Image (cartoon, rainbow, N blue to C red):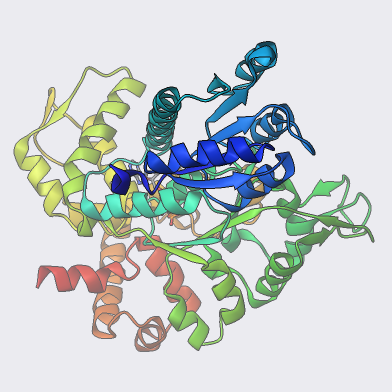
Amino acid sequence: MRARTTETTVLIADDSAVMRTLINHIIQRLGYRSMVAEDGIECIKKLEEHKIDVLLLDINMPGKSGIEVLSYIREQEMSVPVIMITALDDISQAVQCIKMGAYEYLTKPVEKDRLEITVKNALSELSLRKKVQRLEKELVQKDIFRKILGESPALKTCIDQAMHVMETDVNVLINGESGTGKELFAQAIHHGSKRSKGPFVTINCAAITNELADSLLFGHVKGSFTGANNDHTGFFEQADGGTIFLDEIGDMSLEIQAKVLRVLQERIVRKVGEKKERPVDFRLISATHKDFTDEIENGSFRADLYYRLEEYPLYIPPLRERREDIALLARHFLESFCTANNIEPLSFSESVLEELTAYDWPGNIRELQNVVRRSAINRRGSDITSLPGQLHHAAPLQKTTAQNDAPQPPSEHRTHEQPTKASEHAPEDPAAETSLRDAELHAITRAYTSCGGNQTRTAKVLGISRSSLYRKLKKYGIEKNITLSVKHES
Ligand SMILES: Nc1ncnc2c1ncn2[C@@H]1O[C@H](COP(=O)(O)OP(=O)(O)OP(=O)(O)O)[C@@H](O)[C@H]1O
């Protein structure tokens, strides 16, 4: 029995040397590890410096009384159970201690059996309390991640990593192809963090121009430049006390990268047209679909900023690497679509589910969402037995729709969207559009695959600029997926 309990430490705080020795002796004979304190001040010091499992606390002590120590324990929200030791004529004070949260009181002289039972009970109550706290925490975490559906080990690993990192304040860099759920994860990390009551500010980095960067990021005062008709609070200040989510961080210009690096280092901002500096307290989560090794190598991304962003990397795998999730997600999107549109419940036939599962989903979950919606709209009965068109054609066409459907940052964060909207270039004949698209997609796919996914070489082969290649890859929702899916198929 002694060997079993030596892990448990009991602190005995009593100013009487005789009582300390007596209780210490009993505690050690019961097999617990013991520590002693001669007064309230020493008791608090030991509580702070050691892991104490049970505290035996005398009420009347010099320096700080037992009641003062108890108040301190409650103020600091320490979970140690406290057993008060009191003289018989001090019962009213002992009762007051129970009201203040002490577990129990024992009267002097302390009997061995009573002491043994009380310490044991206090320990089992503590372990029960810890179990309840753990279960409560698990419930909260499950609730936070309930929007992120999937049963695959790959997704579960991501959720597990996100759960661990959300309790800290470190910067997280989420990497994954378009539509894999990076923003969803960023939101979950924010909601599960100690900043959850603060704001979650999303910034689409691709949409910030160098000219407006200072004003958008740090704010401006009215009249500080032509068109500044009102004061504006910058994004970093808006995120004060909360989380700032820098989406598409890989698209940020070098000039803006320098500004962001400065805020990360100094944690202060200054509005355009103002001298005053303001401290800002934010947690940074950023997301990218790019491989930063290339970007850093070719000088388009600062290594020093990258290392600050990537204090904790979180990789969200594409859907084709977690095929187990496809049927589950498809059924979920179908059900949500039916509910939202007052449609009678629909279901997929087994062969359609197989087809969905076999497809590579270059546009990932966003693409799947859209295919499901279109299937529901085109249905001919309550069973969906075929998909809208061939899936490999759905990808590029879907991507454009999907970008419009995707959750977007608040409008003020989207002042300068990328000019790649289908409507701006729509040819008159839709069939011509499809064949042109197919030809372009085919050419890009071939070049990109033969260049092993290297964007600079692919752009050279195709005779277009790297940025224009990037826009096209994004437009078709293929990016690095082509290389991977080709590998997958062969
Ligand atoms: N595991 C999931 N369960 C349910 N819905 C998901 C899941 N992952 C993503 N989604 C949904 O898919 C869509 C795309 O997700 P999200 O915007 O988070 O992706 P993203 O990786 O940030 O995309 P992009 O890089 O294009 O900005 C959203 O509607 C999101 O709610």
